[in-house]
Length: 148
Image 1 (cartoon, one colour):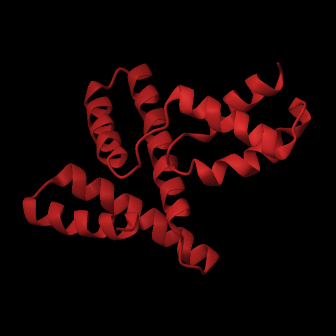
Image 2 (cartoon, helix red, strand yellow; image 1 turned 180 degrees about the vertical axis):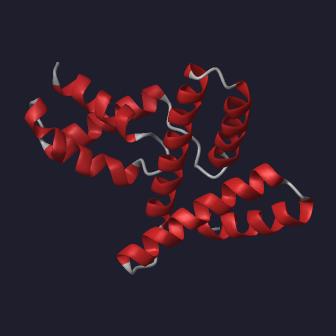
């Protein structure tokens, strides 16, 4: 089932169950998806929806750090609960070994030899890893293997 459809169903279930955290979180993600669809005037594919979910998780992780610095445990707890809800809609994360193997295969496929070829490798990898690994983690792995 498409992630967007799963989110819409989860919103209905959360409303029926009275689960405020899940309802609020799913509603925010669906709003972000709809906003991008309106802005681009297209229906988003699965990879784009997963990218939005990852972006929302990253935003919330940043908010957790800010709340910790501000000594606001109430905001930290609420935001971490939202992160848990969002992570349920992402596919199983790629392991470090699997990521390394995928990066090595993409480097060979792109014929990359130096860090200057990083863009070619990332262009191949990101669609394959949509929702399974954050972009910063992928780029760090690519950079590390290209510098060897």
